Image (cartoon, rainbow, N blue to C red):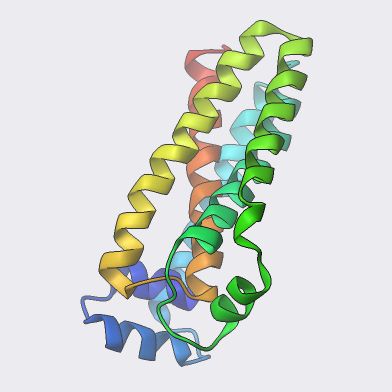
Length: 179
């Protein structure tokens, strides 16, 4: 996963070379730097959010991995494969295309749960959903242009990327909407 983050963000190679780099199991300097930055940023966001915790924070923290897995599931179901072998191909062959509506059900149940708790929470959850959709639209375009489709590493990196993005959004919500 660290290798795919490094390839996605720091490599100015063509698609075939990027896929070849991802086959290498060794982690390079940019891969290590990417993991350190990812973990440090996540730590800072979590620390700041915990410092300003309120009654809605817990629901939004639970919603964060739900939204990231919904993005990954959508990418897995709807995106083409970059190569015909590997974990991405294995997972895509195992998933049914008809399982996409289950993600809408997850979101609707979460929205109903938020509605029961407080209407302001519905607004905050909706903002998090919009942020996830924004990231999804962005990453879909980048995956096609950088790789021509998904791989297992790309799916893993997209989950980590959307989670970091949503931690940032949650932190911003704490300072501007819930503070």
